[in-house]
Length: 162
Length: 162
DNA sequence: ATGAGTGCAAATGCTTTGCATCCTG
DNA sequence: CAGGATGCAAAGCATTTGCACTCAT
Image (cartoon, rainbow over all chains, first blue to last red; front, side):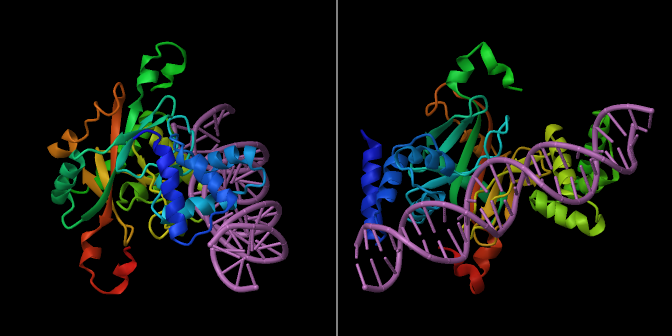
């Protein structure tokens, strides 16, 4: 699975084309950048970075394209509330559509993907007793804590941690 | 555990007083309404409802009070992205501070609390192998699907479901 | 009395929308 | 060459903030 982002890009392009959506230069630039981005960027993040090499890029186009990808199932969205230090409340976009969960570091704010194992199925079983009749479609899990890098940092601002 | 909301209210009042915060009529009204609310309301929801019996209530006061409760550990927040039908992206507040998860209905948007006590739930939260060194502090789980009521509704708008 | 809390309105930040123009298919 | 896509700016929400005033302690 080397260069997963390259495969992603190709898959997105092929599928959008197949669905009759137009492949404008703007969209290709967005797809190229987004498909390779593991940082769970916000729409504004992408816009800012795209603007560097594509000065006429507009919010509308970024949102519009992300929306198209969303409809086509090539993006997952992630909403974390304001963290410990009020970082960001904007929606984050994730090009990884494999079932997975997220681990958010309370110190640096970094987000790590956690592949979903078969254990998730066990979890949905347990739900039956708690909410009888609820038909589970998806399970999202959010781990909050301290990432390996920040846990290792003994000095500096690690003490932000309550 | 009858009238859990009454206990909650008393606990909140006692604790805020203990922490030296002022118990204004506004705050008491907010606490009274919020502590009994199982619907995971947004700040705006609370504001709108409070306004009926307390016409001078302002956003600032509602947010300010929720913030105080948050700092005192009497509230949990919940951020769902825009659902299937773009309902709401606002932060939701939950007076239930027992460890629990949430089940969101894709049809009616209803949110149900799921106690996190079951052993299966706890067991499935391990992630050591996936993110080595990550120090987990909390785990939030979000189930999406269809609630019992909506699953039973054969006619009407149930077909909204993709 | 005194400073935390309140209320209003203006400001901020993210996202959406209206609409004239452009360009892919 | 037709309709989807773009770009700009203005509009929409949720939330925050500034500041004079009020009231719980």
